[in-house]
Structure formats: structure tokens, C-alpha cells
Image 1 (spheres, chains in turn green, orange):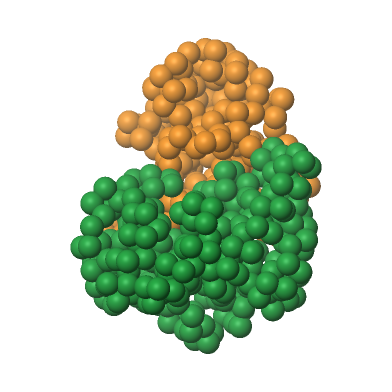
Image 2 (cartoon, chains in turn green, red; image 1 turned 120 degrees about the horizontal axis):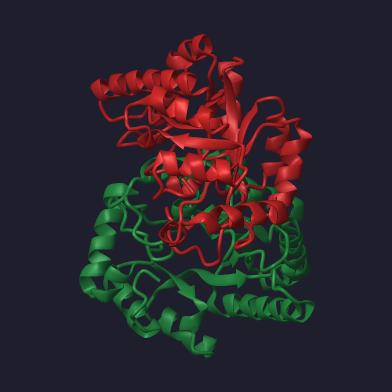
Length: 258
Length: 258
């Protein structure tokens, strides 16, 4: 997503040339043909770090909720086909329900698709989103809450995804990262610029904001997490100028700040 | 602040005419002459619910931090002169410090001015701000954290302010409101519209958003809080059309939704 204007083929080829070993895939890039995408990625010598995204359980009507469950099952299959170890779960907003109803719906939805994930060898990575997205994207808003959910699910096929942009502000962060020991299945980095220019598109390149990325990386390392670290930046200015320089800048900033 | 374009005199007179018994005063409205403001408010038969704001402790240099402490002492005096029982504390952003350094600076600042507040009979109301303001306004971002601070200070002159806009998303909200029993010294309402149009100016009139205001009001009531409830809406559209209809709308929505 850091290079959203690129096609999947461009992104994969460019990452491969730049010596980036993993790519996080978003489903809207798959163009329905998942097997073809898997072949392309394999041909270029890349591995898929995760597929994004499943979730969005808390639809307003029972009929739509059934559709979401079906879509999550499809996403699990797609992740398996791509060799993605993790399906990132953005759990969905309240959508007219109370927060506690929506949170119950999310847990119920995760429980329902968990056996499918287990069977497919895909881990559901519950990603807490920043509280400013509670109304529109996710009622799961803290790492503590994601940890509670994973504790409830109590399965090898459920873990948490730590995204620096979403969790950096949390006074409980260090405690909850440590509590997530053994269940962290993804780690995303970007930065929080000051002032934040936009609620959704405001993320910045690492080093252009205030997040203590190295400290967070060390804390995540200390839990034993040794999987890939994804750079995930939604930023229209970056997208507008996305050329090969983008991946070079990303690599440089990653080494300097993460 | 809901009627920011009004002068203090206009706001006081209009509230008095509308039968609103309390007014929350912001310091930039005082025009230096606090005694005159106190006389005006008393003449119109109003009471001051709180003075906003003290805090902003985490300045980047020691010299500026000394200035902030002095300014907080002035704010305490102003609150006492106005008969405001509470000085609302917006504790300040990280300002180039790490979050934990800034949080330590905040606690230290509160400790330093606490005796002044006690002497003046003014309560320091620690207000957690929404996490989206962590970088620019307040490193105190959850009610749990504000409760911890008040517990640390352990004084009748320290309490928490619950602002619906800032805390509604929190999975810990019910638990932390109950934990704040006996230390809630202010309660602010507004609403969170979907989509949120702006990070700072996006607040809406009660009923125009998704916050479960009545449930929160009942939870705050259940702790024994029986002080005033402040309507605090930063919204340029409301400000642009601020006339007598604003207070009528506010009263109506308050009754319907709070």
C-alpha cells in the first residue's frame, strides 16, 4: 500500500529489484486471479508477509454479516494460495450498533472463521486500529483489547498485529506488547507527522514523525517476534511521486529509524 | 466555547436569558480583567462550572517549563476569583521529548502546583484527550491514565474530567468511570459525527454523532457525580451561525440525548 499506484506486478518486480524480500498484499490488488499472483510473486523470489484484509464483521444487518463471513472464508483461501502466513483482520466499525454489541459481533465472527483459518494454515492477525477510526473502521482500538480477544480465542490460528501508527500513543503499550509475547504475528511501521494532515491519509515515512519506532521495534523483538516488518504508509504525496526512489527511501529510513 | 464568536459578556447574557445556570470559561475570553468578569457573571446570576485551561506542562525547555508553572499558578488564582471550582488541565504534548519523559514532566508539574490549588480551593481536573491529540496537545490520553495520575496525587485538589468526545471509544470506559468514583470533577458532552470532518474542529452537536451519551451520563451519575455537565463543541459551522437559536438547540439536544 506504500506504493498504491503500482499494479501488483509493478510492486512485486520493483520490490524484487530493490532486494526487499517480503511483500504485504492487499486484496483489491489481486484482480480475482490469486493463483496468477502467487506465481508472479514466486517467480520474482518474493514471499508474502500477509494478506490484508479480512474482518469487517460488524455489518448492520444479519444478511450482510453472513456475506462478511463468506468473504472472510474467501480471504483465508486467498491467503493460503498466496502462501501468506497471516490474514490481517480489520474488525469493523459499530455501524449503528452500540460499541459493545459491535465488539461482541466481532468476537463471534472471529470464532466462526477460526476453524477455516486453522484448516488452511493461516493465522488471523487481529489488528487494533487507532481510536480515531472507532466510528468508521474498527471497534478494536487498543492492543490490550486485541490481546483480550486472542486470549479468548485461545488458538494457534489467532494472533495480534502491532501497527506503530495505531498504537504508539498508548500508555499501556509496553505492558501490552510484552503481554502479546508469542502471539505477535505482524508488525507494521510508518510515522505520525505533526501536525497530522489528514485522518486517513496522514501517515508519514519513518523519521518524518514522532513515533518512537526503534523503541517499539526493540520491545517487539524482545517478545521473540522474528517475522517480517511491513512498511505501510497511506500518503497521497508519496503515492503521487511513487517511483524507484520510493523503495530506496523506504529502505534507508527503515534502517535509520526502525 | 460552543459559542466562541461571542464575547464573554454576550455569552454570559445569552446563557442567563436562556436559563442556563452554569458557564464554562476559557481564559482567552477573560481579557486580563478577571474581577470584572466575575462581577458580570454574578450580576447575570450564573455560576462558573470550570475554568479552561491549565496544564501544558511538557514544554521543550526548562525555562519554558518554569513559565508554564507560573502560568498555571495564575490560572488557579483566576479560577478562584471567578468562583470556578475546577481548573481543567490539558496536560501538554510530547514536544520533542519521549512520551514517557513528557508524562513524567506532566506528573511533576501537577505535583508542583497542587499546593497552590489546595490553598485556593480549586480542584485540578485532569482531562484525558483523545489519542489523536497525543502528538500536539496531551500525552494524557485515557481515563485510566488520568485515574492513575489522580491516584498518584492523592489529594482532594485533584480529580478527573470526563469528556465524551475524548473517551467514548475506550473499551475500558465503564471500568474506568466506575474507578473514578468520587474523583470526577467535570463532565463534558458533544458528539462524534461520521465521517469526522476535521481532527480539531470536527465535534458535533449531541445527537449528530455516534457517542452513546445517555449511557455515559448514566455511568457518570452512578458514581455520584452531581455537578454541572458542560456542552463543549468546537465546530466552525456552529460558530458561523451562532445566534440565540444555538442555545435553544443545545438545550433541546441536551434533554433528548444526554
